[in-house]
Every structure is written in C-alpha cells, then in structure tokens.
Image 1: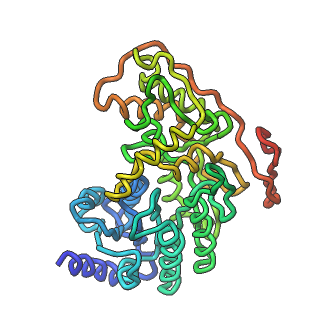
Image 2: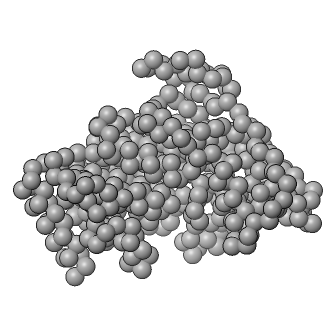
Image 3: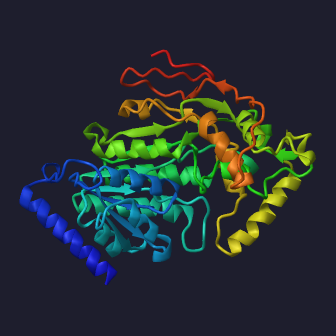
Length: 407
C-alpha cells in the first residue's frame, strides 16, 4: 500500500507538470519548503552521512524528493520530516534489480547517486557497488531521458591507484575511479563530484575513525602510517558538500563537469590527529600524558585484522580496517585542476578548527559539557598539493609539492 500510494502521488505530480508545461516552467508557490521548484529528484544512498543533509537542503528549496532504499522502513521513516506532507516519498529498491531502479526514477528529471561502501560484504563487493551499480543506474537514467545525473565519487579516485600498505592499492579508490569511467560511458553529460574526507555528524569516517574506542591510544601510543608526517588532507564539512551538490542540481553550467570538493585549507595528517586528541582531552589525561605517534608495525597490523574479523562475520562496519588505512592514512589529497566549490559560487567554507575540534570532543565525551580551559594550539596549515596534469581553461597546475598555483 505504501508503494502504491507513493506512485500515485508521483503520477499526480507529473500530470500537473505536464499540464503547466516543462519542469523548468512548472514552478508553484513563492519559493521555499512549501513550494514546488519544478524538479523531481531521486537520491540513491539517502541514508548515509551526506544523504541526510542533502535531503534537508533539497526540501528547503522546494524540490520533490524520491528516496529509494533497501533498508527497513524503521531506518528511513525519519527522512520524511525533512519536507512537507507528500514532498518526500520512500520506495523500496535493490541495486541489482533494474525494475526497482526504473520505478524509482520514472517520474524524476534529476538523479543523484550517493551510493558507496567503505567495506565489502558477501552480497556487495566494491566492484558491484562502485562500478556495476553505478553503471546500471547511469544506463537506466540515460534510457529514461533523465535531464541531470550527478554521481558521487571520491577524492584521489583512479583506476591506477598506486600501491601503499602491504604493497597493495586501495580497492575503494580504484573502484571509485572505474565507476567514474563507466558513468561517463553510459551518461556522457553526467556531473561527477570528488569530495575530500567529510566530517561532521555521528557517521563520518574521519574524526570518528581516529577517535574510535578501538583506536584510543594504549599506553599513550597511537599508530599511524609513517606517523602521519607524509600525508596531507583537506577535510571538508559535510554541510558544504551538500550545499555544493544542491548547487550542481540548479546550475545549468555544471552539466558534464567533474568537481573536486575539498576544505578551505590543507593540513598535515599528524597536525590534524594531534589537534583532535588535544580537543578530545585524550592527550592530557593521566594515562595519556606521554601521548606520541608511532609508525605502523606488524603487531598493530595484526591487531587491526583481529578487530576487523568479527565485524566481517556479523556484516557490520568495522571501526578499524586495512582498507581504510590505505584511504585515510596512506593517500594525500592531490588537486588535479578540476572546478571546485568556488566555481559554484560557494566561497565561505567551514574551517576544520571551528567544527572539527568540537566534534572531536563529543566523540569521546559524548554529551558532557565541554570544559573551559586554555586555548588549544591550532593545527599548522600547509599549501595544497597539485598533480602534474595538462593545464586547461587557463588553470595552471604544478607537479612540485607545496607550490601554489600561479594562474
């Protein structure tokens, strides 16, 4: 009955659009949550960290939203309250079922694919999720005449990802790079977004990863790949990413482009870790007064494998994994000259010092009120890294690290 009712409301919406003309001319209301912007947006991967904020932002702009999900309705019902009555519609679907995908995008003119996985299961591998799943959605969207297709990739995604830990490349980044290629093949005008490490909320894989209970330093030691001295990150607040995705939906110049969404500043990973542990009061407690970072050794690698094993058995995300060490600790964020948030008119970005430290405190101390102490030393900033790519559109890039662009 839920599916029938949702489909019926979609049909009524589409009929009203056809009566008034095309989507861009079917505006209703004065704008805002209680209006209709003319866009019907299907968001795959709506239950993730980015999906929740994106849905809230789309609902505020008056977009009609269709949310396909394979989870139990108990875990998706809270998404309805982001919009007005009938504005947010839920549909069951399976990534390997083409008919359910067609049903989810049948009445839409914009499709956003946020589906991604940090770990593999017996039902979905990285290849099936990032490559075959992305190809399937893009192909069906093209066949059904979708106007805009937005695909979420990852920073540093490439099919030629260099080997790192254990002399093996990151399968997450490799399959994300392959996913970009297959999306371009199936939907040439797709908009691809490569976000940096997103933080914020209770589900991020950056701050929560370093401050997980399994990661809290034992005997004042924290193990990081090469002590974090050779990795550089540009973390970005998830709210800025959702703002950029919403802007690509309404910006006609974003069609067919590849964007890199990164934070306003670049940091050495060791600086970020020290800052997070200082703000979480982990480096000042009695057992951690001699806090120091150490390089990964074979004993710690065996510990990570032991922690990861039961989570694989119960098919739950592990707070520690070899694969995520390759992504977060072994890979630096390198810009390739693609357009960024500034090209979409988003110039005021949230700095990590403003929200990252507060989130680090609540990750460990939960709901306790933060103690007022002396100011914490801020993490030192570093110039961003640029890849050695062929300049285009008057964008000059450098192959030397720590060299700012001259164009």
